[in-house]
Amino acid sequence: MSEFLLTQVINFGTPLVGLILFLGALGFPIGASVVVIAAGAFSQQGILNWPGTAVIGLIGAVIGDMLSFGMGYFAKDWAQRRFGKSLAWRNARASFQQRAGLAIFLTRWLITAIAIPTNLIAGGSGYKFSRFMAYDIAGEIMWIGLYGGLGYLFGSQWELVSEFISNFGGLILGLVIFGFGIWQAWNWQKQNKAKSYKNHSEGVEGL
Amino acid sequence: MPSNATRKQRALVIGLIVVGIVFTAFFGMRVLHAFRKFNGHRPPPPGKVETDVELIRDWMTVPFVSRMYHVPDEVIFEALEISPKNNRDKSLTDLNQEYYPDADGFVVDLVKTTILAHQPPPTPDSVPSAVPPLTAPPAP
Image (cartoon, rainbow over all chains, first blue to last red; front, side, top):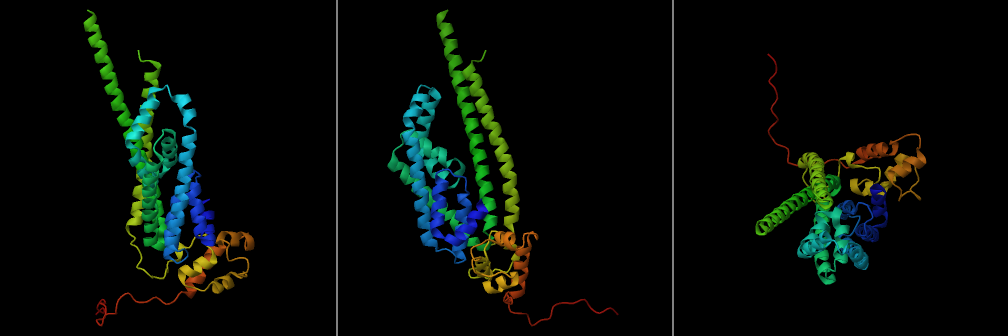
């Protein structure tokens, strides 16, 4: 898939880069990060015009993010009906609202594998659209600037950069999942301790 | 006795930690491997003409290779015995499948050979030293 797209990027240039980043932002697994790095390298080789490609790519990615935020927004009522009574859901919503800005920014360029769920949750949890857009645009600029810049810098050796970055993203995702698991375990322990303390004191009072 | 919800919560937490460890170990190894490959490479100086033909991939088109290595595309098409007409947008894999279906990888290999044969002569990186290199003394 990725190789077919690279051939087409050579042939169709900037508009296709914009389309690929748009589809990537909607959740199609088409290797958008690889295309950003390759587009940087192709710009260095004179195949693409880098300012134009960066702007069109950014517009494509941001429109895709807006649409996936919208999907979450319109699924809000359904999610509320389905999970609204669950304490875990309410906690998750509250916890997301607290750290949403950082989550949106980091999932644009560092932990890209969870960018779509983040958009859906942001839309579904009633996160303010203007704030979402601000963090989203900042993150997408970082993604295109950093990945495309490395592709530009390394030119024909861009595949080395791509291999490193895609695996690094996986490593960060693993660390985030692990950290989240530990944090959940810690919270759970704390809740259990509080519950047993409460039971114990109620028992003492009952005597 | 733990309730159903507690059991579920415990399974979720253990699952997250296990998945996190598996992901971290798997991608950590791959990052290390990629870093080792990456480590010996530095960004090429701006304007440098590529000379390493091992960077040619089968998704590339002939005009792309021509641009990358500064070798005219007519030379490559001629070597492949293929007309440039309607073939400029095709990848090397597609050209192989269309014109040499029985010879796997033939087009990429031939393009590499053609590029090597037609590359401009390398420019010296430094001025040659006036002092002749040290050689082993002649045997008595």
